[in-house]
Image 1: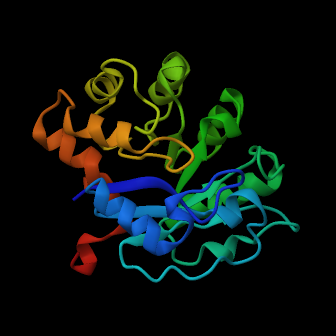
Image 2: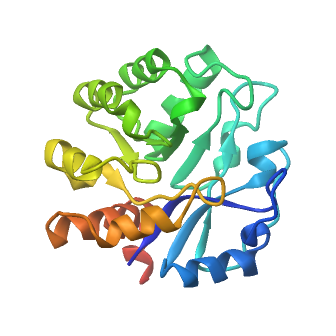
Length: 234
C-alpha cells in the first residue's frame, strides 16, 4: 500500500491544479498509483486554519488539521482524534518554541499524535529545542531537500523521534543513506503535491536501492501504523 503523507487538497494561489477538489485529487492518486493521501486543505494552509474546511468524503483521503496554538489560534481540541497534524509557525506567525506551542506539543505527544513540520517553516534551533523539550513527540520534517542533509543528520542523531518525508530528497542515494543510517521506520513517502512535484518522488519510490521490506515501510507501512489503518481493516 502506498500512502502519501504530505499532500494539499484545494485550490492553490496563482495556479490551476487538478487537486482543487476531491474528484481531481483522487484522479491524480490513481494516475500515480497511490492508494491513500494525508491531506491538508489549502484554505487552512494559506488562509485561516481556525475555519473548519469542508469535510473530506473520500475514504482515500485522510484529513490533516493545521493547528495554531494560543488564544488566537485553533485550540488544541481542534485536532480531535487526528493521528497526524501540521504546524506552520512561519506561515501563521507563531513561535514554535513559545509557551503556547510548547504546551500544545506536550498535549500532542501525550496523545500520540504526530506532527508534520515544514523545513522552511522553522529554524534548526527551534526544531532542536522543541524536540529536546518533548522527546516523545513524533516530528516528520517535510520539504528538507539534499542541501539540508547535514543539518538533518544533526537533528536525527540527537532525536530518535524525528523522521523525514521523501518529497524533496532527490539527491543521489539521499533516501538510501538516511535509511541505512537511521532505519526505514524514520522515512516516509510524501510528495508535497501540488506545491511540489509528485511524479518524481513516486518514480523514486519504485527505484530505491533498498531491501523490499524497507521500501514497504517507506511506501506505506509507517503511515499505516501511525494512522492505525490495520486496526480498521484497511
